[in-house]
Length: 384
Image (cartoon, rainbow, N blue to C red):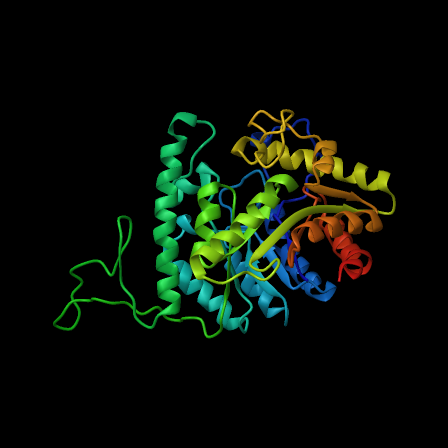
C-alpha cells in the first residue's frame, strides 16, 4: 500500500458550516494566508514523520476567501523537500493550462532534482474561471451553461497540447512542437547566422518521475491511460468509481498491450475524520463538510454523488454529511470504524494507492496535526 496525505490549504474559519457567510463574502487577510502557508510546510514534515509516502497540496489563485491559498505548489514543495528526506511531494493538481508549459517543465525539473527525485507531477485542466482566465486559460463555467461545452472543448484542446509539450521537454535532450495553441520554437528566431529549430530544456529531470491526472469526465477517462499516466479519483460514489476503475485498466491494455497489475496506476482519494467516539467525529466533521460543499458545489463538483433517482446528482443537489457518509464519499467515526470502511473500499477496488484528505476545512492546523497523528497511530497500522 502507498498512502498519501492531501491538503487543500484553507485558512482557519471558526464559523465554517452550511450557513452564512456565503463563500463570496469571505475575506482572509494576508497574514492569515501566509501563516497558513507556513503551517502547510509543517504538515508536510509531519506527514513524513507519520509514515506517509506522498504529500499533496493544490494549486489555486486569487482566492481571497482563503479556501486554497497556495498558488505554486512547486515553490512550497521545494521548502518541504528541504525539510524532509523521504516523502514524495506534489499537487492534486498543478493546473497545466494556467502555466506556460515550458516554465512549468523547468520548475518541476528543478524541484525534482533538488529533492533527489521526490517530485510527483499531478496534473489537471482546472475548474475555476476566476483563476483560469486572468492566467490565459479558460474553463467551462456553471454560470454560463450555454457556453460551457465550447469552453470545455477549448480547455481540453489547450491542455492536450500543453501536456505534450511538457513531456517532450522533460524527456528529450532536444525537442520541437507544432500545434494549434503552441509552437516551440516559434518560427524565425535568428541565432548565430541561422534560425532556432529546436530547444533544450535546462534543467531536465535527473530521476524518473510519476505523473498522475485527476479523472472527472468520460473523455479524460479514455485519455489518461492512453498517455500512460496514473489516474486519480475523488468524491465519486463507489458504483460510479468501480466502473471507471475497470474501464481505465481496459483502455490501458488496449493501448499498451499489457495488463495492469491489480490497483496499479490508479489512486483513490478519500475524505476521512476520526475521533474518540462516533458521535464526536460526526460533530467535528459537520462544519468542515458543509463549508467544503458550500464552496465547491457551484463549480459542478457534486456529480460524483448519486442523486435521489440513482443517477448522477445534478448541480442543485446539496449533500448533507449523512449523504456523504451513506455514499462512502466521507468516512467518519472512530479509528476502528473508519479503518473497516476504508479497508472495504480498498478491497473492492484492489487499490494500492490511497490519498487521505482530512475533513478539517476551516479548522485550526492543530486539528490537522491531531488528525495526522491519529492516522499514523490508530488507522494506518490496521491497513498495512
